[in-house]
Length: 244
Length: 300
Ligand SMILES: Nc1ncnc2c1ncn2[C@@H]1O[C@H](COP(=O)(O)OP(=O)(O)O)[C@@H](O)[C@H]1O
Ligand SMILES: [Mg+2]
Image (cartoon, rainbow over all chains, first blue to last red):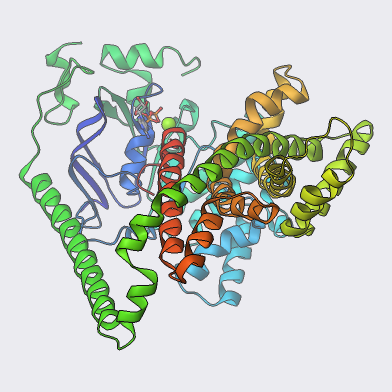
């Protein structure tokens, strides 16, 4: 059974139909990469899965539970996923360590000492063990994004949602974030990520989905979809990325 | 793009993407909507019933108490209310005029002082110092003292060309005191705008003043609208303090009416009128904040 299953999802903003009868299944341990033009609804899809938006129709299930059911507590559902945003969205008034410890302590009720140990371990993993006490705005973009990933990871989420996490970074810093995601993937983390990094998609994706017209217009393994797309739209979109 | 190539597209997908497809809500969605509606109705019902119960119980407790008839007679005498209404309303007109004139001046002076205090660089040290001294002084001095000093002290100097009217000096005192408070509200707002906004504005070649005027201050004002309203509501009531200089505002008018027969109903009339004045102001700021405050934050 798939870990995340989206069926017939519809999301509109006023007259703007962003997702329309959208279907997607993600198996546990799978890494699905969403590509598509700006405005094609990648962020909206991730926000719907994270219950940051109310869907207009359709069902999203996480490990078999219908999370679009208004009877479920959205906070509990969100606590089971990690989400990372394009603009990092770190809390500027908290130190790096406190950013990471906030949810373990306040949401998951872990003792401070234990949460701190977990936070330090995760900071070690993302290579920022020496930055625990600094404020986010004293870090480079790549470091901030790694903190944001650590903040999501520390809760051992069942699913990671990553929204263009490298788009705000200069190419030099993209690598450090992508390396981290590759290692996450090899640990078997289930991930849905939106990106414009086709080379990276090629490397980590089990499946690449091209979003267009509110649906998955074409999908397939990266080797096939990125090098030999069958549809005209997909080809037109991919032709803008050199070196594929 | 042909249908023959769409073997790998999920069911329901559609080659003419981007065009609106006919859609009607599924049974599940209708069920969810019904559930959400029922929750809304339930919360509204709980809220209304508990309000009615609390108000009802309070009403019964108060009106059945042994002292109620006397209290009703002294504070809620309808005939007295009708009789005193014109005088109190006339007084209120003064409050309104003072409020209108003073709020414009206070906004201007408060914003000026706030901006003075945010200026950077050694050249502006005197201005920063003046701004700080001004706020320290007028926030510290009791409003009543400022009123008395200006209202009785300055006219007593009998300087040529200096106005003698009590209302003028009363307004001056209100403006000075309140500008000090409002300046701090504005300053907090200005400083809460993220430095990246200033950087972005300066990077476009806007001067310091231009960045403040077109980028920083508009965002700051939006944020401080509720505390600003607080200060103006407070001003509306404190505008009555100029009565100590001998002018007749709503409260002073009520006092005169009360003095005739020691019935306090005129005060209640004045109170009701003040509340009626505040409510539209509060709704107006809510409206402005909602209109400008679109953040697109989704659900949370
Ligand atoms: N909060 C919102 N209010 C109104 N429209 C929105 C909102 N968020 C996104 N949209 C619209 O939804 C569409 C998809 O946006 P988005 O999901 O951000 O695209 P992507 O992430 O693929 O670039 C766009 O047309 C955008 O204008
Ligand atoms: Mg996006």
